[in-house]
Image 1 (spheres, rainbow, N blue to C red):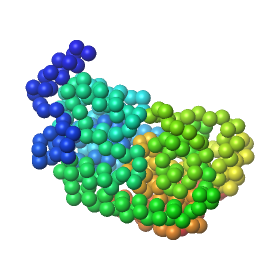
Image 2: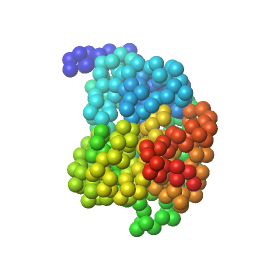
Image 3: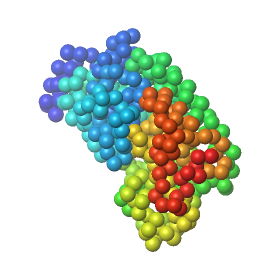
Image 4: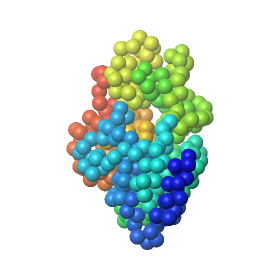
Length: 348
């Protein structure tokens, strides 16, 4: 602690505190050294075109994210891993201080923000906090951060796309009566028996996409991943299952217990896309803008009124500068596990 205090005193003399303003630490000049405190923030800064990113929070390629080279710049892929406040992780405060960021952007969540603020205060820094727990907030966040990093035009372009697609999805979901909304189970973990309650930001896309989460409750930890029993899942007997683990997605159709579930018998099981970042969760990010449409197409293959492949193509072209053909997009969104899976029915 004494060492942190000494470093903080040095920081106050050597460079200014990070300002919680839209101009960062240098007035009207864009910040040159930018640090996001968690993966959803860092990934957001990347697609906004932040040239001054100094680090990522964790290895970009991991079980939840493909981090495909086609979509991410070489510079971004080669940034050092500095850590951050996410899950159960905690960064090295001394190393953050040594990096001398002139803008720190944090994820404004009640389960995390107090710890971030307290830790940064120990080294004489503070952050610009943005609320990304509700997908509907993204247009505002794009504009706010675009202005903060000197990329207002880019922020406006992303905000306009986001608002258009949020409005389109909300208009569709509003046409589905509450008693006709599909009941959804979000399967996480190696055996699919970890999940999120309906009050968790991890599961927010299920509601955004027009589903009803069968697991009710209140989120109490940032990490989530609540364990349930097979007996409980059988009692839930969901209409649709959304799976994060690709290996379990391939295996569950042959599991005698899971074969008892209505969703499995009907082939209504979807594997979450992970290119280049997870479309729904871990991290919960701007990818939900297309992930919500993908879910709606999976939930309501006969009612979803849009061309989800065209929407995905537009998303990747704007956000990542990559144009994908229909076959690549359909394979990404609806990979077959068995002939029973319903995936390609979601292309309507």
